[in-house]
Length: 130
Length: 140
Image 1 (cartoon, rainbow over the protein chains, first blue to last red):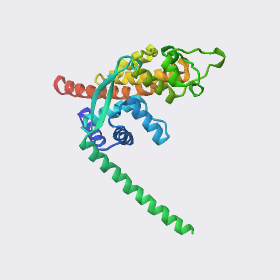
Image 2: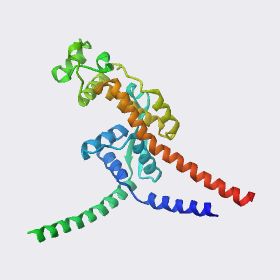
Image 3: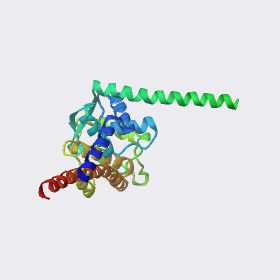
Image 4: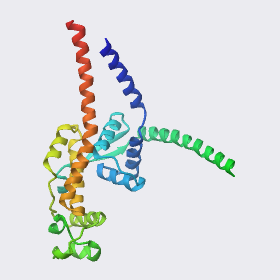
């Protein structure tokens, strides 16, 4: 009975996690929108590196995010061309769906509202200092 | 051109007209002046060569990390994932040389293996819990 109980607890945790967009999910979706229609693993990784100036996620993490987002219907994937330098393997192009754009918009808006609160506090702190 | 791009160390393209290199298809490399090529120039050379229908020499990535990735990567996107790593490896070969590209491939593969392993462990734990519950319910 305990095992079953723990199984359902893990399912609940998974359910909560599946409802939210992680920071990596947001980055992948934003990169896919910016690079459309040429967004695939390497170009997404390069784009995140160039725009954020931070260490980009590994290809494995990137594909884990792509997997997750695709399962939720937030992105669509299609196979593209393959080249010799890729060992004859095809590229996996990523496109953000309408549902994905709406979810991303909500997620970024929530972050922006939190950011606005921070800005207000900073202004308040400056006023005190002056 | 294929020799030029396939070499782990090549002349710095800043001092060479890239267009003329691709046009003639020949290049003399002075061993005393072996330098590295920048990533942007490498990409430009490759796309130039692609449009001219030239076949470029590509290196094979190290086999052990590739095998490990093949074992753990999800079947649906496995080929694309390995293809991306292969592309990065070839780009690093031109930029940094094969030895460093191999080290970077290992690093990238190990970083990529971690989330995959966590996913596999998660699935195993989930199914073990289900089977355990079934066993307890029906066999005890």
